[in-house]
Image 1 (cartoon, rainbow, N blue to C red):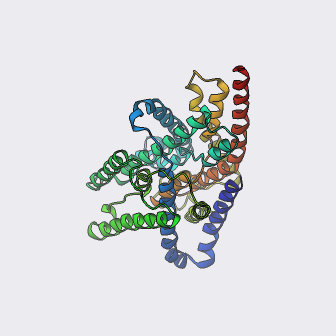
Image 2: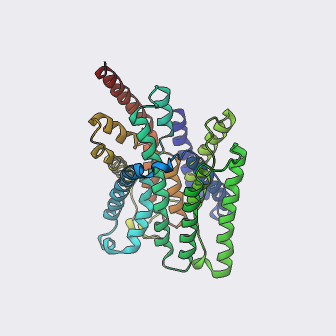
Image 3: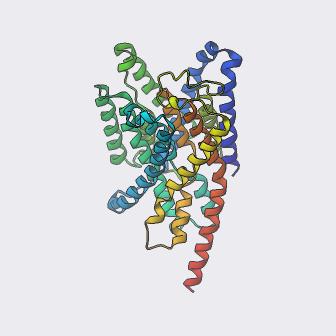
Length: 396
């Protein structure tokens, strides 16, 4: 619970800094140091995604048995995403409902609602002796597929943002190569997996893809630059590493610190939205056309979006009918948990120039879900223990 609380605190601190430092330091000075913070954020994101990939476990000889789980996870990721996307579209002026630019921006911005980060949930269930339970095993599979589906669906969303250009072929090629490598060499390589090595891999990945972007920008111009996000390559790199089930306390501590730093930097990356009249200055972002909002209005929208993001995660309740309603409810609530991957999607959205009150609502929704995650974990743990007791009594 302490980790979730600190996630929230660091995100809040980052948000406060993003709104105060540009004014205190001056927009020009802050703009000069911001690329450094952005690079640090990308390295932290790559570090986290490598570790997510390391947790990805799949028995390739039984790949058909995962088909149903994958499509259920896809629906669980799509439902909250689309619900929030439609809600954001309703908030925009009605004439934008038929505007493709508005749809592609809201589709990208609302994608943060999809990822499930259930690491703390797995830890709590395992500590309670529930590691062999159906809820533990199925939540783990769905959470991993949920994150994988989010990463893969970011590719077409980025293509929508780029448009149909020749760079599209490069992006698609990189995606297919990454997927082939991940499947072909799953858990194959005995790479050094100390925190220092993973941080080194992360840095190399970020600077390689950033270097490609800068080089292509110089050669072809900013509109024709090749922009490949680090999410999928980092995840695949983690996939191909041999499992290492024992981690030193130092490795775990550094990974936690990097997660805290990442949440702070996500908050720091938010554009100025306090005191900005979005109705007068919308920049190049269609979603900013929603206009200015009071903090009371933003709070109401955060509550609605939070509710939609969790209602959409109830999809597993309608499947796995061979199990009891309580088990399916526990599984669904387990998908409510949120973590760093959703915040990473927000940063990608910011990178495409999306802003305005909808961005503030999205960031505050992530914060709200992080605060609520501790409660979700407690509910899941108690219900799962009750199911285990009932099943044990029935078998007597």
